[in-house]
Amino acid sequence: MLALSACASSGASGGDPSGDPGLTPVRLGSTTISVTACLQLGIERGTFEEHGLDVEYQASQSGAAIMPAVAAGQTEFGVSGPPTVLLAAAQGIDVVAVTGINSSPTEGPDAAAVVVRADSDIQSSADLPGHSVAVTTLNGSGALNIRDSVKKAGGDAEDVSFVEIGLPDMGAQLEAGTVDAVWTLEPFLGLLVEQGNRVVSYPSVEAIPGQPALVTFAARKYAEANPEVVKGFQEAVFETVAYCEENPDDYKDAIVRYVEMPEDVVAAIRPEIWTPEIDGDLLQQIADQMLSYGVIDSELDADDLVVSTK
Image (cartoon, rainbow, N blue to C red; front, side):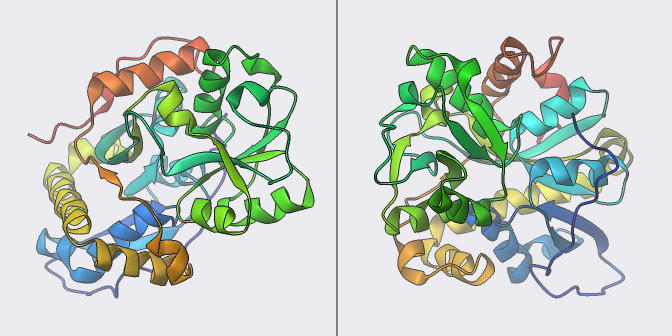
């Protein structure tokens, strides 16, 4: 369950606040990973200012931690995996997805993976039952997709034990043997592999190929009361991810600076699949996936939870 009393922690802004009275101040809560470094780059480059927004970037441990602040009106926009938005809606928290950011591939390696120590007996998703896996959020994308990938591999999805750990701490916990495997994202994924660990599964691809990985969201009340702000935010996100796609060197430099990762690790990161438009059919598949595992207890209409970009 989402803890509405939790608070999203603040971090350094992706760019210096302009203080321009002609701009609308908004706050953006996000976990700082490779993909969201792109948004910080957009703030730094002034893309959001060009659309009338003075954005304060607020760093947080997970999308679930950001949700209470957005629901309470303390933060205007958040970034999370789709399940966080869907779970909130199912619990009566009226939020809507504003844009997509990126998605998983339809096949092959992904920027999200399950990683184990080199000496682990785990070889694939089929071997995960009976083991502990670290995820950022217990009912988030990682846990859901791992369950699905285990089930499709013929294993018992209910026999996987999930432990909630922040991305920066997963490597140490894996090395210490506190958990048997971790579900991690770039650039932490690349760092763990460089340290000698190995990938055993790309659960997003195995579960729902091509699914949206991260979305931005807002409280429905705020979105309906501020349509021009939301429109400006959408346009800025679209332009920002287009810039990162067209300028991969600038994007990787932003990862080095904002996530504070070694250049050689960042250089090896595979290209993102930038998808700022949300695929409603794939979002519905995630909602149905959550229902099938009892994460939500009633059907959701995904189309009703997405702000139009038209």
